[in-house]
Length: 212
Image (cartoon, rainbow, N blue to C red; front, side, top):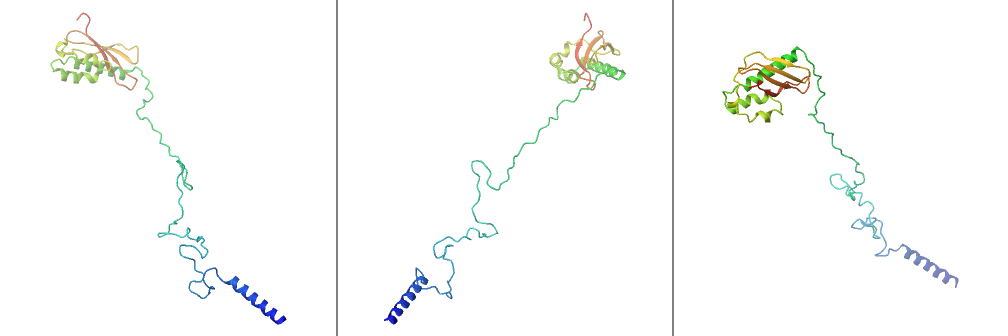
């Protein structure tokens, strides 16, 4: 009787051990089989789990084929440097420099006499046509005086030549000067002006002799 019980218990234990080591699908796993320990196709093991190394495998060319960060709502993606680009400041190269102090001396006085002579010489060149007459006179006038003399008909200008040396008659201002210029019909007065001590003298007015 005892022998029969022992035999029955031995059979039960062997059956339980065999059942525990038996795979759920197919027969027992043979360690020497070619497919033993090889993950199932698609990067999954035999229990259907994902292969953890799939996303870490570099693609051709050495690049990682894992997920790529993308910008969200205009913000830089993770890992992108936060660079703020600012425009370079612009500088005005045409800004006026500091004015040069104006004074009176022999050089300044000579420049005023020459400017007055040149203005009256161009103004008295009435033997030219209107265009040529204006081309000679315009550069010697201030921007304010040009519209005044631009439409003058040289045929109506009574003076025809300068007959003597100019003379400064008023130099009380360092930026204004009056110069008398002798002509064939009497002395003309040329009012000159300059912007500062480095600027040239330009004619603001050409006044005919009194009573002419």
